[in-house]
Amino acid sequence: MHLSIAFLVAGYVLSQFYRACLAVLTPVLKAELGASAGDLAVSLGLWYVAFGVMQLPVGEALDRIGPRRTVGWLLALGGGGGAAAFAMAGGPWGIHLAMVLIGIGCSPVLMGSYYIFARSFPPALFGTLAAGVIGVGSLGNLAGAAPLAWVVAAVGWRATLWALAAITLAVALAILTFTRDPERVARPEGVAHGSVLDILKLPAIWFILPLTLANYTTAAGIRGLWAGPWLTAIHGADAALIGRVTLIMGFAMVSGNFAYGPADRIFGSHKRVALIGNTVLAGALVALWLNPGIGLWGATALLGLVGFFGSSFAVLIAHGRAFFPPHLVGRGVSLLNMFSITGVALASFGSRPVFEAASRAGDPAHAYGVLFLFFLIPLVIGLAVYLFARDKPEAAG
Image (cartoon, rainbow, N blue to C red; front, side, top):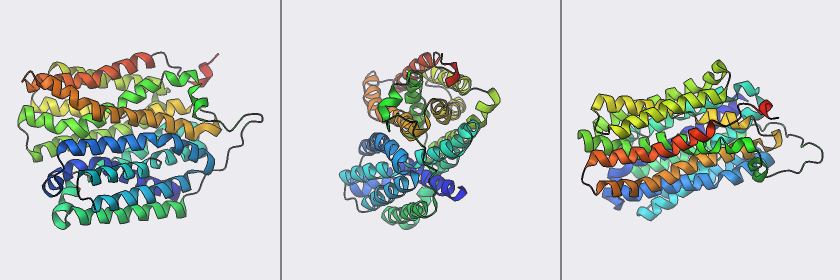
């Protein structure tokens, strides 16, 4: 079981790495392939779209055939094949295709580990284990920053991508070799195999979905797309300063995941922890919205708060998982993950026209204030709906 989890976590490190690497590769891809920052924003959005769309078949596969084959084969063919396609890309469309393949390959990795946690460990440990995987996996986000830049400078970006393809294939092979599927769940007599529609028939889930859509979107969207341009426009930050500030935000995201995990056991409630954390997150976004020209130290502190308190994804998954019947766990956690990733994809595509429209006034601070409001509104809506969520299944009549 420990080897099962270890290699799935290694796969999730790769998943985090692939979604963060384009920022570092931007200069060399522009110089050699003519891929602009806008092109790469589309590539990243396509990664999230492919990842999100795959969650429904991934959930079905986890419940039917288990995580070993679901994760192993998709990571090998999609992740390894996509990295190889990236290494051979001749222009922006080649990068788009590669990122779609990589998104497909990475789509089952986190949910595979969550499926094992849900089926093989006590329910009280699910939130802690789920957050721990994200915390460790977030190291891939950090590896996709300065360490990647050093490797690319030393051996070139194509050689780097070929090496990543080999590493991804090796991790996939290890998953196929060492991962053990949990024992199959016997469906209750007279109950059909079920589908994601059965998950959507659970009223409690509808009060969790809006916040799941908005929470990770905030931290991932700002960290992945807008922190650097904002720091440059307001503070004249160069690449080195952007790297330092976003590294602090990245470490805050890692720390937040590790903190959220045991917090739900300390407070005795997934809902209470998620409400407190996301309320603080909303407060940080309000501060950024009202004062987008804040000084560098204040900007760094607020980005750190967004990173730390915007890491409650695992707690929300744990909250929803409590309502899923055992034979639908794979579909349930994958559905929540689909909503989370869909939120990031929508923000990747939607934030750019919002910012461009706000920029027409010629005031960068105002434009970024509107951008932070763009992230704040869905979070507030999600929080308002989440207030009415049931804390535990026992609360149902």
